[in-house]
Image (cartoon, rainbow, N blue to C red; front, side):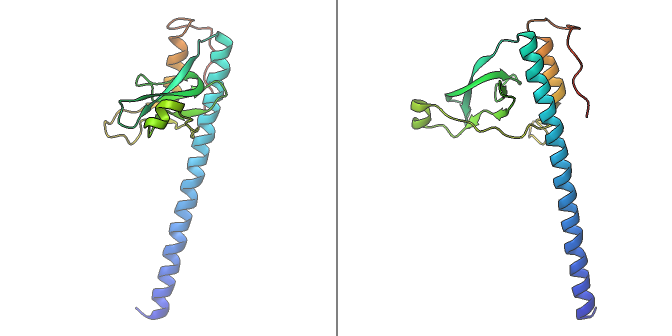
Length: 155
């Protein structure tokens, strides 16, 4: 293989990697947009139905400490580590913790909502975000199986 052939091969490989990364970024952006639409639908529907909100609490990374936040909203998982606030933002409620956090509370920043919660986790348990949010609405004040709820938007 000559120097020119090697250079062309490297250029082709760089272009292929760049194209793959661009396609992956577009896919992730589309997934985040769809998940944001689901979260917005959930907040509107939860508000319409009068689903009670709660003061959200964050947990330390080690799972032991509990820390106040200034957030109000709904936990979307049983572990209470993921939540949607009343402004329609998705939050992961795990924080570094420590004495300062215990004294002054924490301010977890919103993060993009995943379409599949728990995907890639070590325990192998994952569930579509749509299922979690719909389940939360169905188990709310309207009771399980309520038929008064509009369907979740489809992507």
